[in-house]
View 1: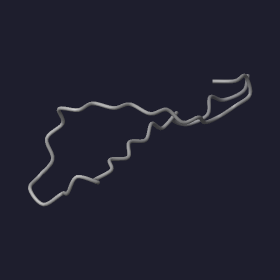
View 2: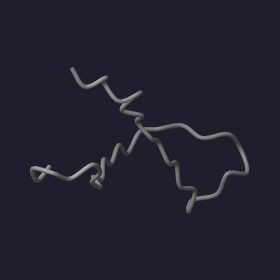
View 3: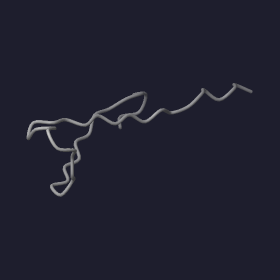
View 4: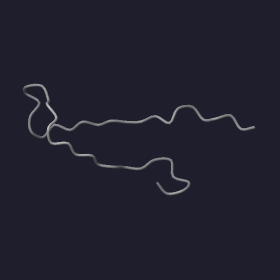
Length: 42
C-alpha cells in the first residue's frame, strides 16, 4: 500500500469454495477489514 494511503483493493481467488444451493455461478463475496479506532495523538 502506498505511504499515506488509507485503503487499497486486492483480489483473492479460491476455486474450491462451496456456496449454498441456488447461489449461482456468478455469486460475489465481499469482505472488509476495519482498521479500528484511530490512536490518540500524544
